Image (cartoon, rainbow, N blue to C red; front, top):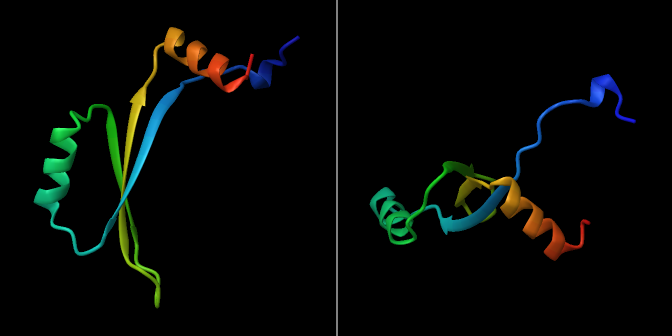
Length: 79
């Protein structure tokens, strides 16, 4: 039996992370995303750690339908 405070919404997403060297030009990233026909929410993270490699991470996030989420959970053995 579900507890009232545990009720909410569940959203499943297909997520792809691509890491680039920090020196990459924005136009190159835009071309990359267009060629992949990227849709959904796109976020970027910059890793500017001292002494380490500076990178840019592009996170592509596409919301799945309930049917798609069920198929993926089945493949991953979550059922």
